[in-house]
Length: 193
Image 1: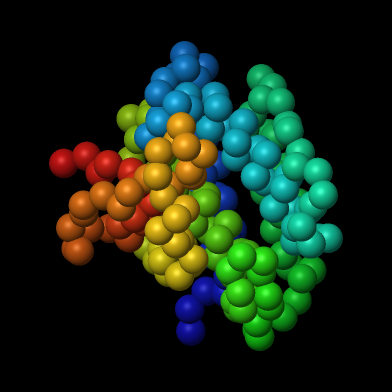
Image 2: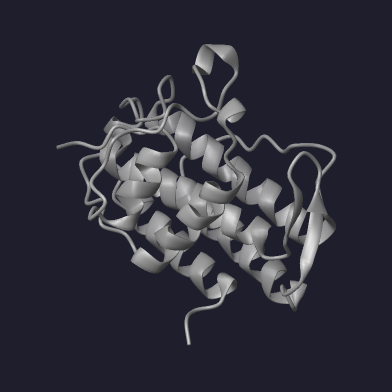
């Protein structure tokens, strides 16, 4: 029997934590595969994601998107946010069945957590790439994330960042590539040769 979505999210967040742990202060201004974002910008984004996803898991869609400020101890901030998010998902209980999402339609109740798996997998890959770390990540986590974005990423979500699009055109990658590379390519990242 495979891991539950909560177990997969725990793995994804742990991998993200390990990459963040190895980021050096002098690397904060490094560019990332997220076009105009630096490592600092991406860390800010991840901290925002953690708080927003925690609110979604606890209360449904938050009415106010939080804007954490990256302090000197970003690793501690990430760990606390991860613990809160996992605790909310553990309390959510049964994720079987379906739910309606505006603009998407009927999706499995596990869709939000799988979307979070995709988000953290891609951004772990981004941070690892930007700071010269290994991009070899958990295959089960990346496969779950890829399955989620493959089901929800419509063509009209893709385009240039200047046009307000969050995903670039799908990039070429070997069918035999690790799942995280296939996920990154699917959302528009260029995979190094």
